[in-house]
Image (cartoon, rainbow, N blue to C red; front, side, top):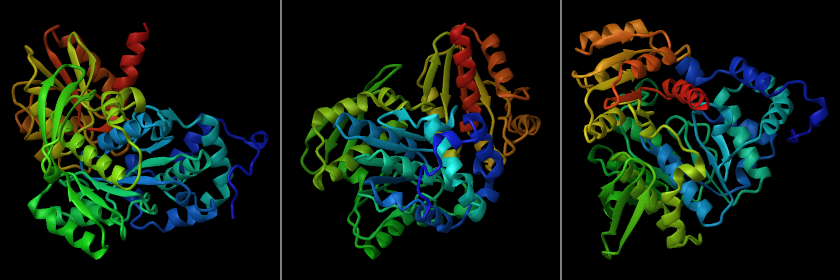
Length: 450
């Protein structure tokens, strides 16, 4: 077996940037090349874990899947467990700016030296197994959590569930937020087919929470839960959730337990109406974890919701980066997610709307563009990844959908032009892809440091 850190720091040949270059260039990465990087089984992950003395068995976890909301729910759960005093790991993907965002403990990103050491030690195994970028990243996260002896880790799936690289853990709880159309070329063309893939994280005897009851998917989850003898709860059957008030930086939400009528109000530091559903799913998950023995006080829950961004560093969920003009970013990239974001935009007061958009080339972009308002100025662009839909092609598709604007070869130029053109009382929305937002955060960080 390969012993982690067998290579002493003095024999490491690569620095951090060189290590990332090695990972990006050597290994197939879905975010860059798409379906060609998708491994439709967990064999490589199991082999990696075997070589690493099975780190996936050395920490407790919650496994989170779903089409939309799984990232928000994962960060909410991590924040609550941190507030409850637990040493909490958090694995999410993709990252926005720095690779280290994917692997955190109590909000602290994995150290550069840990990444360098891990990759240097694992090189012979990488040469032998030829794993994907995601498989190596998952193995790295699990090893880090095991070595650091976390009390619990919140593990977000990458794509699907059944065949996802993360699906080698035996969690305390499985959570599936919702089902909508995304990655249909890999997960299936119907909602029940996609639900079947997500339901793959349900394990024998392990409770599962479904965030949203969808008639077309309900039987898929019930059947899998029954087959696995797993207790199953639908969060919207457990709690009624209402928005009490909203500010630009937070919203007050009321949750009422349907069975008892017990009520609790929370302040959530994430805005966006879609977060009501995510908060209900998270609250139900906390209930289940408390019932199986985890000590989580009401104050820890309240503080956890109130400090999600501070505790975990979450970005890109209806994030306000600037006030004049109002600049909002959101990682929504499929029909369901974008529909929620665009509805939320309508609740803001503004003079003119400017929208910076870019997509990857495996989305049903024509269908998505039909959601966008005609009365807006568009800045069509593309991220600096091979999977990006070319900006000129996107602009042409936008024009055919009745969306008018200009095309820009990169995100930085698109956002800069939007900022120049927008009046102080206008609103700028940047959306369509994780990879579009990465450049926005880098640009704003440079702008604020001047």
